[in-house]
Image (tube, rainbow, N blue to C red; front, side):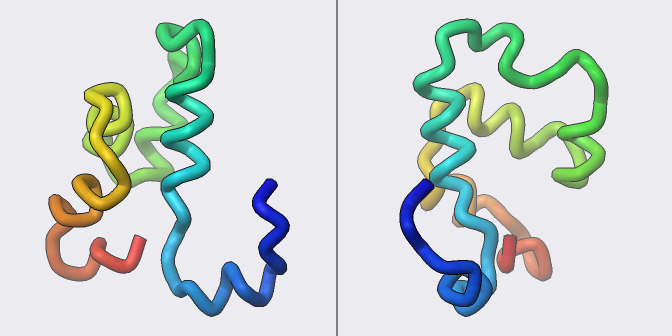
Length: 73
């Protein structure tokens, strides 16, 4: 994807949301990008991340909105 090694990604100590945001922005059928199951919401800890991506927020905006311990996402 980006040519970064696994070790480099681990050193970042946070999930790179940029890939997910870019995939969503470039996906032609946005209504079906997130499956109708609740799996994504369950993994993300609720529907907020999905909603922020759909709203077009940047990774920096999403991170700024995270509270407390979730800031390491």
